Amino acid sequence: MVQGPAPIITTDRLSLRAFLPADARAVQLLANDTAIAATTLSIPHPYTVEMARDWIRSLPEKYGAGELVNFAITHKTEQYLIGAIGLRLEPQHARGELGYWVGKPYWNRGFCTEAALAVVRFGFEELNLHRIYAMCFKQNANSERVLRKVGMDYEGVLRQHVRKNGRSHDVVIYGITRADFIQNYG
Image (cartoon, rainbow, N blue to C red; front, side, top):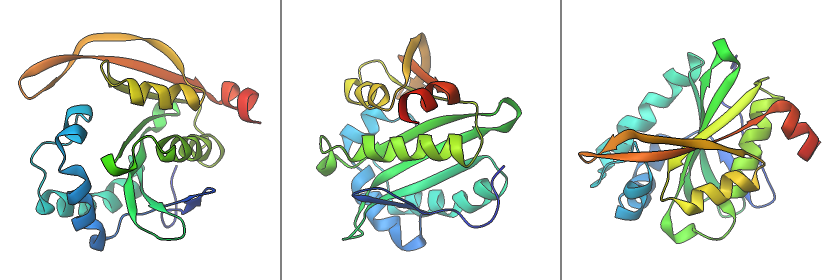
């Protein structure tokens, strides 16, 4: 499903590229925020630079195995790190799960929506996926707003579906098919 080096995707304001070892400190600084940990299942708090290094080191193998394509969201001209976005791939079903986080200093500036739209387009046009879905904590209204803006439809609530910090949480699920995306975005 994925071949060759990880791609670079550019948008009006962003460059989506592979994470580099040199990004570890910036990842740690952005991800080590209680607001990020509270809205992201896989990011604990505190989040150390060694956790960031380990995560970045794990990405090429997962990409090569066709399990995951993950991008550093960076500012196109100034190249600073804004966050992370990617697709966890399920090739046997021709689908991918969209996941992302954006550092708190960059919230409410449209960066996440711009990156998400580019990655959804990439999933359909380059990876030939049939469906892309995403889940977020029910209380994460900002993430739900991003998913609606990229054309995903609300599909329901998975009650008490995940556990974080010893508590069960409801998650909402959104999805879009290739046909829906083409109808909305050509």
